[in-house]
Amino acid sequence: MTNRMSRPTSAPSVPTIVIVGGTAGTGKSTIGAALAELMGTPFIEGDELHPPTNIQKMASGIPLDDQDRWGWLKKLAEHASRTARERQGPVVVTCSSLKKKYRDFLRELCGGVRLYFLMLHASQEAVLERVARRKNHYMGPEMVASQFRDLELPGADEPGCAVIRSAEGSPGDTLGTALRKFQDLANLSTAADFACDQQ
Image 1 (cartoon, rainbow, N blue to C red):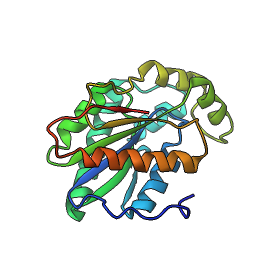
Image 2 (cartoon, rainbow, N blue to C red):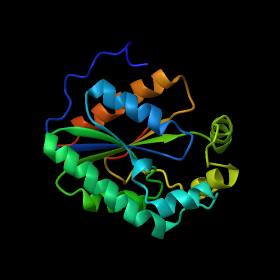
Image 3 (cartoon, one colour):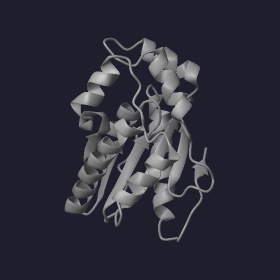
Image 4 (cartoon, one colour):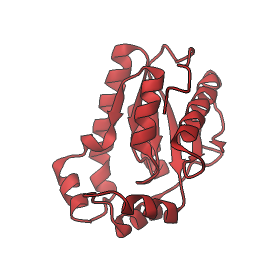
């Protein structure tokens, strides 16, 4: 998927976290891993940082609530910030980041590190079709529905964000859009504030 694209030459040389967010079934892991490979940066799969209690809850088909997520988000932010600071460059992380207050919490915890959100989005129907094709996966229809109930896509007043329609085109198209959106956001990062870019 990445061999048709050239490696970007203007990746930030400062601590930077690129969060690939969205509900289940939008392609976060696929696009996140490919984006990290394309940029030559570390990749952190956020789901792997969930505590055992969260994993057990999801495996039982029980949606996570706010209290389940705060500790996970803190661990993810600390790990990603440490990685970005150690290498003085970008790191790509997958994290659903469904609610604005989750994204604000991550911003608070990642102070001093540039933070961008690439929010992948698809219709609930498209997501249900995708997760139905996954074998041995905990994400059932009710879990998907709960994520869409929680979902708050970034608005024009939320900085450092881009919304990408991941159901449109191929994964390669989505990857290309994600890279372009990140580069657009990074080019604006010297401004005091900038609007959320909606595709």
